[in-house]
Image 1 (cartoon, rainbow, N blue to C red):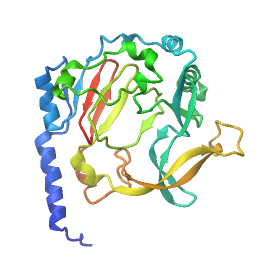
Image 2: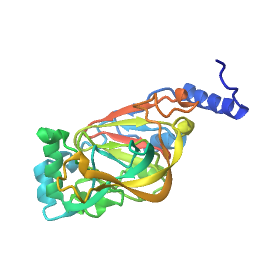
Image 3: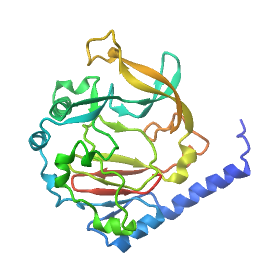
Image 4: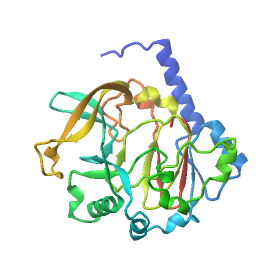
Length: 289
């Protein structure tokens, strides 16, 4: 069986992706101390991610405990994403109709103390296998909004990064809280990101923007997780349904952790970079990563 002939455009794309990987390697640079603005600017100009170990280890937030957070946030309500399996904003195959959707989470406002109790109980008790995973993942500048009581525990800016970015103030400062079942789907952000790990650890799988051809981006119909009105048992999986919407969005359907499915002719060229952040670590993610 012969392979289909490749067009000149496809050949050029393969050469571009391969050459990029040859020039940049298959690792993320790490620093053990804070960079100068000039040193950091080199990574910004190259559009390459960077890990700085222990970069925020002196922040007061590094002393956070569940008890402290509950005290500081007593009486405060926060926006929570709820899904059956922790996959908010994700590609989901509806087996009943063999249709793939981009599915958004059920969003709720609830007391922070209830939220933190639930995610801890799910992590450390027999509730771990329940089909009700909560994640605080708002991207609306929530650390200066609903979590403002905690804002005092972090630096107001990262000076060396601010200088490298031309003195620009951050558009948003967000606090994300979840447990080990919280998963974010493969996506890209149209802005620079600096991620600081406070408690626990987080695993990142990173792809260069040049690998867009590898991820099988498609226009997908949108849906939102909802609860069946007929179901009064909130933690039962059969209590969930998809509320289908008219909107469609472009989204990657290939998953680096399940690389056999949803491939394109370029997928074999992908070289995902993997990074684990621990408390106090910082990750710089360039635009479109």
